Image 1 (cartoon, one colour):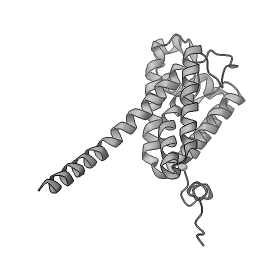
Image 2: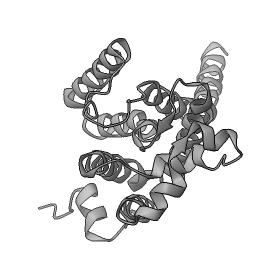
Image 3: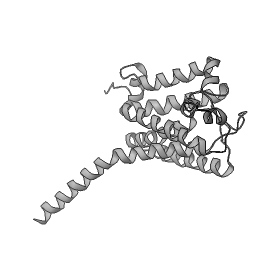
Length: 211
């Protein structure tokens, strides 16, 4: 009888502790429950124009209410566990790229104020769905992917966030697409050496068969 525990359960029990995911969630909680951090971190266009450019990144670490924090902490925990379990460095890189891309796009938006990590978190969605599908070969990750892209399309056409429509500040739905693009871009970069190696292998096999 095989007594091996599922990989995600093993991770949660500590044999492969997802330190990056845990640290991110703790940081979000600390930033929320220590009000002076919010005042220093949130994005406000006039303050950024006055030179407080760090707000382009730090605004994504603060949240407007308990529900806002809960959604993003929950998403970070689930997606981070899946990706970091096998590719910790990639999880760090993709979330960082997501933060940078969303932050770089904020000055070109119509927003005067912004807060929340939901945009950058979307960088972890493509690898998480891919990893779950690669392990299970189940239709469930495919269904989740379809629902996810359907949600993005609805948000983009309606110009409102499905999960944060009740926030006191206007939602910034393009941030989700920007985060998604960051994640897909890094996946393509990481996949290039694998694809080149596969192409070289198949070419070599074809050459051997021809000779």
